[in-house]
Image (cartoon, rainbow, N blue to C red):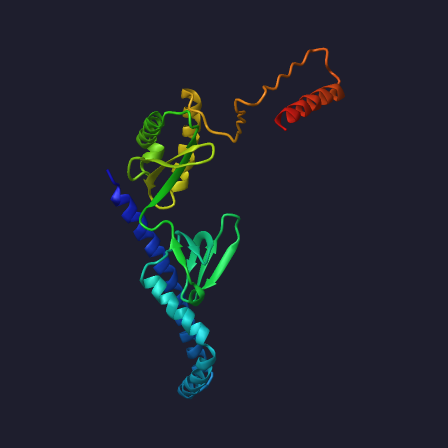
Length: 271
């Protein structure tokens, strides 16, 4: 059963945090501007004349501030179209991170290593929100070719059901583990794809625990993980290579010479 209530509440909280920060900055700037104007009027400055001069100057400056205007207009679209919010995990122009600020002019990400990335809103060419409404953790599980895929799928579903029943994880999981089946064949492995639906940002929390349990359960039931290896086959015309080492043979040079002689004889037979 989907816990849409928890997801919707989380979305509302992020939306409120984003709009609240912007409104606070606008209100603070307006109050400061009004206070400065009041102080200047008390000091005897002609505010109306100054505003008229500022208006004329603004037209001239506007031609040189096209990038600033573009950033602000783009920022308005980002905010009111609800593309990203404070608390989302997003990828902006190829850089991934936690959204810390969404301003009229800039958007700010903090990547996993703590680096802060500031993007002018007008320069954002690609934006991917990884935590909008819900998230998925995708598993690509490698098993050996000798394993029974139906058995592996059954074990994965058992693990998914177990973790969903536990209080520490049940509130973060929105739907049962979805095992999609055999996805592809690698050089030394069969790839089984699965995914689990979670609350935004909780996919890594749930996914890491699932990975831990999958490794542990596979070890317990004897499901083998693949490793790179190579098999060499000889046809019927080849003479088998026979190599016998006794415990008394400890000289590496002697072993090396003996192996070289065998390989030389084998090569002569082939040619």
